[in-house]
Image 1 (cartoon, rainbow, N blue to C red):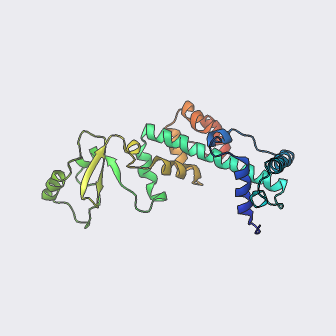
Image 2 (cartoon, rainbow, N blue to C red; image 1 turned 45 degrees about the vertical axis):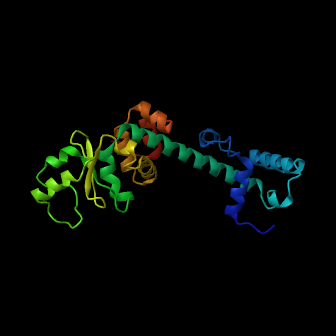
Amino acid sequence: MKTMTKAELIEKIIDALTDPYTDSDEDIATCDFIGLRMAKSMLSDIRYFEHMADIDPDDRLPDDVTPDLVMEAWNCRIRQARYTVKVDRLAEWITETEPVCIYDQYKDEYLKDPLVVLPVDFLHEDTFPFKLIDDAYPSPFFLIELGQRSPEFNLSHEYCWYDRDEDQLFSTNTPFADGTISAKDLAEYALTAQDHECLEEILSCMTDKDALLVFGLNKSDLRTELNMKGV
């Protein structure tokens, strides 16, 4: 067997410890981190199973897999599962709550060319709120034409956006639920941004019950854990 890198060894350990058909992130996220003693026992169990199942030597864990590496691999898998669960739960909350104002505030921080989604009421302002293809100031005649070629736009909807490729206006009441804006992308940014500003904005819109469902902590305890200033 060729010599494996540490990353390859960790991947092989995780494959040996999990069943992709039964071990979900939700399940693994509830596991406690393991110490060296437990890692030794887990490695011993894997070696015993490989021996009893007469698994081909090339498919077994390499001899240089140590209890320390098993401990590192499994604890890494638990952290990854906990992160994935938080992202999924926060994305679900974002989808249900539709915090478009938070997306608008932070979209330029994590997207290269973000879609501008604004309340339909912004169209009542004197200045057209969207950047046009040629950067030209829209004339009244252009706006009339734009309305005519935008059959999916509805003034009764809450949010709207201008699609430069289609050269049309679109609208909806639920841009996150529709997939117009990615709830997962916003959730990942909120959870990974080091300044926690986006997460603070999200927490300001949450109840303690929401925070418990998403993070497993109430807002106060979460802020303390992350050393957040609070809002």
